[in-house]
Amino acid sequence: MVVLNFTLTPEAASKVHDLLLCLGKFSDAVAIEARSSRFTFTALNSSKSAYAALTLDAHTFFTKYECIPSRGGPDGRFTCSISTKALLSVFKGRLYDPLGRDGSIDRCEVSVSDKPSQTECRFIIKMICNQGVIKTYKLTYEAVEVMHALFDRNVAKNRWSMHSSAVKEYVEYFGTKTEMLDIFSGEGDDAKAVFKSYTEKISNGKEVLKHPLVTAVAVNTSDFEEFSVQPGLHIIISVKDFKAIAVHADTLKTSLKAFYSQPTRPLQFSYGCDGLACEFTLMTSGDYTAPSSQAPTPAPAVQILSRENSRPESRTRSFEMPPPAEPASASTSFRSARRRNPGSRQPAASKPAAPDPDSLFVRQDEDERWEPLEYNQDEEETLGWDASAEHDAAVFPTFRDSGSLARTETEGSGGGGGDGGGSTEVVAPTQRVSQIKGLW
Image 1: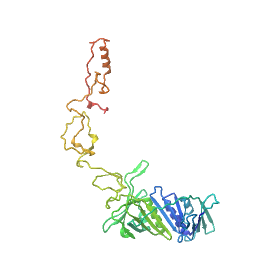
Image 2: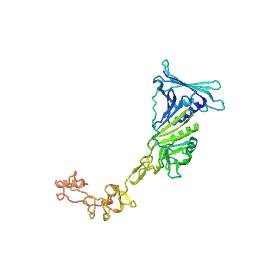
Image 3: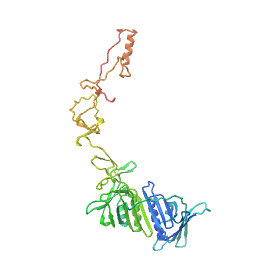
């Protein structure tokens, strides 16, 4: 049987409401881990690309705190999972009012009912109001195993720190439709840190936004409390996650710190005060092998680069294609388009040097055409009828004049008038192959 009891002041209960509002942007359920020295809310989004851990110190954040896990001794823990909406319905806004007006509470008492004699376990929250009214909420929880994301700050050489109010001001410039955020800094004495939000494409039914939204906010590095970032290094995260973090950090009026090493490696935001420590570990994207001076290009969505160019950031979907064998100024066409109509009468031009057999493109002005074997340009191509029936149809399929064949067989058998011999007359062609349309 676990023992968990703690008491919150109105101000602390209001902070719990703010952190639950932030965690609701990441997951529909929050996991709770209670130890003898701390109480932690954790959340992991559905794509497992963002992890949040908000820790409440047992001796600073609470006025009364007691946690005795059922097993594990002093280092044991109690873990469970509760719906975020259910907790937000209890920890509503305006729980704390400095003027003591109606709606504020006197204290908040929380306990866990986990006894063998009871059929159901409950997370019990009591809101004791100033007028003597007690509101009791009994929430159902689920026993889960809570895991934490590991982050080594000793490896994260790139870091910066800025007051949360300034960060929130910059976040307000980002469009509501933007998806990704690129954070990088320039080079030189007057280098600036740039927060660039963008989206590649927006679809609304049949309507598609063809021009991507891009918003860039440049900040002088002197405005940061601490700024130690490799020049030209691009780190890309989700705009939605960054907004939720910046808004919550502003409620605490503290500094927001960022730690990261390189793209595709985790980034961690950290802040806290008054017994509340917040850590958000986010997945990043980018190409860590790309030159530091090359920025990702959000548009166009597909970009063709030559082999001489270095690879772009991974957020720009691109692929490499070798250049044509001839100069780029010459008009090109696919090799499959080189087959011409056999009936055309264009003279063959002199052949230049042999083209690269592995090249995808050929010059159109070469007039180098594919021709069938033993093709004679001086011979007139015609379509005729073969009425002799002397060829094997399986080997030499032809059109046959069935009427002439039937007449010849009848005359050869003596079944009618005539010269008594087989007719060898052939129907003359009436049209060129080049004049026939619709068959090929």
